[in-house]
Length: 304
Image (cartoon, rainbow, N blue to C red; front, side, top):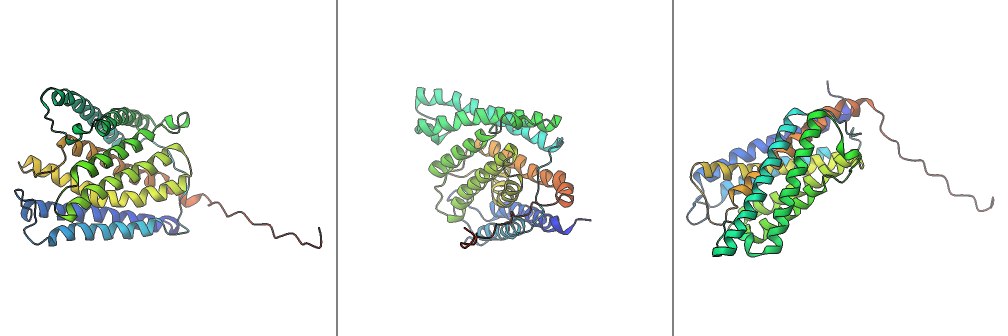
């Protein structure tokens, strides 16, 4: 039985995963039946698009409200072996490394003939920032995967080891905003940009949790940001990739490598935040929470 100290956190996860399921179903319905791939417009006046945005977003917002309620039973993060997050960390690491190498090789083709599948190649500073951070973050994910497999804590000696993940999230958001948020439909631009922003914020608080800085606050904000990651970014990327497998793409869509590497990173974070709660819950329920420090009464002027 879940105690009252963590019951609202568990309820928040139920809402967050409901938002993921609703977002994925609604996004697939939109892309299968109500999206014109030639013009980029919706065929139902945008009704299904708005439903796919607002309903999962409402679930994520309600989850964030539950996660951030005062008096919740957050405590120290308990580090344990985590098999599924480790697998996803390895997968995302390999995908990031592969995509970084592929972009670097593609840049030579761009220099030779002036053509590239990556729109960012026209802006070398932005492009190479993203390439370098993809390679570094990929290596960090492999280290994290090994740590989750063995239960060791590499962040004890290198607290900022996960900072490249935050920098990659920044570079990814810049690339998406500058080059791929150009749809004539507001909802499409919202999904691409706000989804990338949710991924960045989740990476930021994952970095803070890994580093051991303010475990209770980092976990609370990680869960809140992760709810929107589950509701918006993962359904958006998954639906796009499914449509690619069916032979349907649209103008202005991100390259498949971008979307697949971002999806793998997002999937890792989504599973990690649940396992972080699951493994730490018992400690949060049993350990006493820190009491606020008592303030000393002001000194009596007459005693001075």
